[in-house]
Length: 191
Image 1 (cartoon, rainbow, N blue to C red):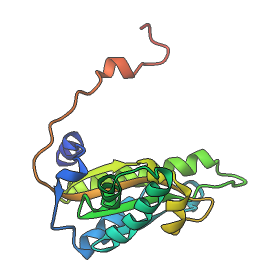
Image 2: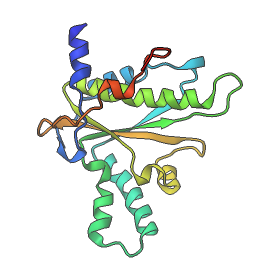
Image 3: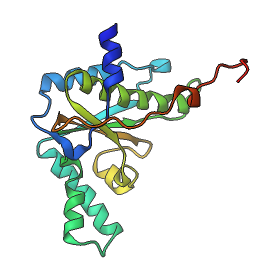
Image 4: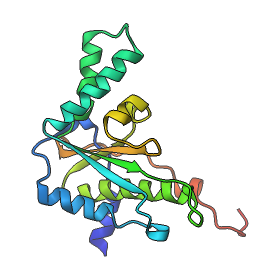
């Protein structure tokens, strides 16, 4: 178990622009998705799914992002629009985790949303375990309906996050973490 604990302790987010190729292989992507699918899922609803952006697919999706950006900001420069076009091309592989949470007679929607979040975090950890860097982010386009429609999301679906995956060009520095004494209490104990 100490290897697993060390893996969890050493996980850090890597900026997408610091992730380089080669991308994970098809077999590794299957491993990543298999692990990401093994999360708590009350009622076995599978309230999430994945969209894989690799190769030219990253740029095709970027066209939808750039188009929405251009419509939102008609005064944008060509350089700004091009930066938006490359949003999903900053890393060799991007996997979107899509939340399909919805009303259910027994399972609260909140639990379904949390399950999608757990899938995203498991994806990040699986990438780390395979020796890749990863970054789970949502940016403006995760909330833009035109982009979501272009990516094939149904009206009830939302992006839980885009997980950027690649090899680390440099090891990221760890950020300060809050002391446990500031974020945890023992209920019923004198504090």
